[in-house]
Amino acid sequence: MIIRQGFKFRLGASDVQSARLRVLCGHARYVWNQALEKCNESADTKGAYVPRYETMAKWVTAWKRAPETEWLKDAYTDNLQQKLKDLDAAWQRYYKKIEGAQRPRFKKKGQSRDSVRFVNFQKYCRIENRRVKLPASLGWIKFRKSREIVGTIKNCTVGFEGGHWFISFQTEREIPEPAHTSTSMIGVDMGVARFLTLSDGTFIEPVGAFKANQLKLARAQRALARKVKFSANWQIQKAKINRLHTRIANIRRDYLHKASDRLSKNHAMIVIEDLKVGNMSRSAKGDQENPGVNVKAKSGLNRSILDQGWYEFRRQLTYKQAFRGGEVLAVPAHHTSQTCPKCQHVSPDNRTSQACFRCVQCSFEQNADVVGAINIKARGHRVLACGESGLPDSVKQEPV
Image (cartoon, rainbow, N blue to C red; front, side):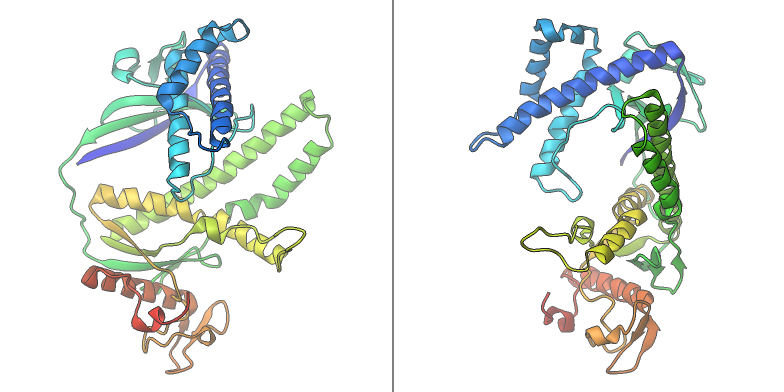
């Protein structure tokens, strides 16, 4: 089995190296935006197609020869090529309608994560203890090596976020087919009041990283609005907001890693709901002709859903189970909290409140999230046994 894994560390770039990295990121951002503009023209033209990477690469050669953009000759060619490959991959994900994939957007200086990738690591780069040698006139740069890098390094990505430079090494190694140490199966219900509720009755509280920092972020954004745009004070305040957003993302990511690691270590089969997070968090505002209803409440719910990081949790859980030899099984989410696990009766009246479940037919009582987790696990058993959707007959007859 081939394992591909990333190792991320903070870089200790000097002022000269930081300036050079900013220039390289600016080159890559310019090429992305120029290529995206051409792609958008093709995508919006009836009967045309979005150019692939092979065509985009020829544009770079033409831009280097043009008098107005000949400064691109100072760029590191591999960085530009990798940025175009990323753009090509983004368009392919968008057209294949992969969940979470959006139409590629323009990158704005200071408002998007600037990064450049260095490929052919074994040929052009080198690591010695706690420093790495990079091409493009960067030389040796120290980094905080907090753990050993396992596997053969294939490429590395240098990016700027939260006021600091970071480097990520992508490695590859081959290991024997793993076998999970556990044999248990668990159902997992994801929610807002409780982040995770398991079919054994235990649950994990949400961290609410955005909610905990929402007021601080609002004050910082109001302070930014009172400053002259692009002034020195405006730039300082903008950097504070970026650092706060990075802190929120780091808290959420760390919490998701700990939760997914805990589940992955203890259970070989994890059954979750096949949630369409993008559809669930879509705005209810509507338009002037057809205004939405309960817009404020829906907006708060959307914010809570996105603050939980359900999609990222599923992604982390999937690859960690693959590493350990386990499996993640996604089953339909229809009526999981309205179906009685005892008599299989389905009714909206079974769930009398957000947390309470009481079957109107057999009087079975339990926490609604626990009931949902139990039903999810049961559907997982049916999928594994019958290879079907996992929905019981009582649910299949209900309109979706």
